[in-house]
Amino acid sequence: MKSRGILDKFQNIVADAGYGSEYNYSILEENYSDKNYQIPYT
Image (cartoon, rainbow, N blue to C red; front, top):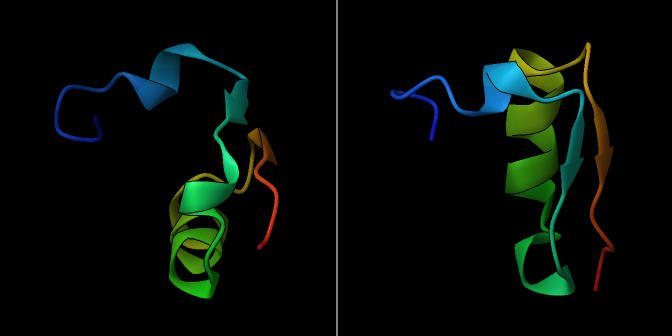
């Protein structure tokens, strides 16, 4: 998604709990800190 620029088109990022990991949160903070993301942490 990043290579295609898909996430740049949206302000909100929503995913299910399967993506709620520390690694994914750190990637979001590093690359998309200006976005709103809602991913439950399991």
